[in-house]
Image (cartoon, helix red, strand yellow):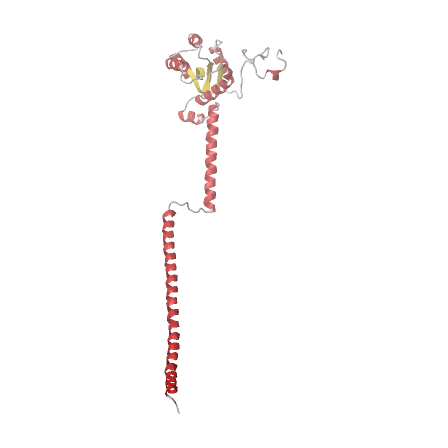
Length: 284
């Protein structure tokens, strides 16, 4: 016969069986909730990162747009070649200007004087006579003006007949000093100077003075002959004009007195020749 204790134990087993199954069912129902919660967290994390990246890209894009105006543009190959070509032309222009300035400073002052003369319908002169002079030779110049060289209106009338006479002088080593001012004052009174602005007046610069004189004379006047005269001689002006008139139209004509006698090899002496050795013995 079943006792009360056994009956109670059996009743307890019956009541425990359904409670364990409900616990199992409850535990199994929590798993999807946890997974869903974790999925939400993951989605929020990914969405936050994407939003942050989008904000960063927007900031960078704004900075690029602001700096694009000042940033150098990308040049194509053709643009680069064009720029290089412009630079090369610019360098050539600068070099040409430097060469022209150097040529002018050295006395090569050729210009389009033929076109100028044609436009002015001027008659070609017979001769341009340059009388070499120096800063301390005013007395000699006054002697010339009172002897063979016309002055004032007579000098202008001679120019109208085709003969120009000018005293030729350069500038002082100290530009603008009393030597230059005295020459300028004298020229304002007589108007018979050809002042070589690019030449420094010095005894050792006489060869360059000849170059500057002929270049300036050719640039200023169109003449058949260009004559260089020293200031230590009196010129037979009428005889010179008659001789040149008889030789009009001669091509490549040069007339001059070449020095004869000893070759001066001592530096400091008049007519000193730095290349004296090229002429043989100094006494022949």
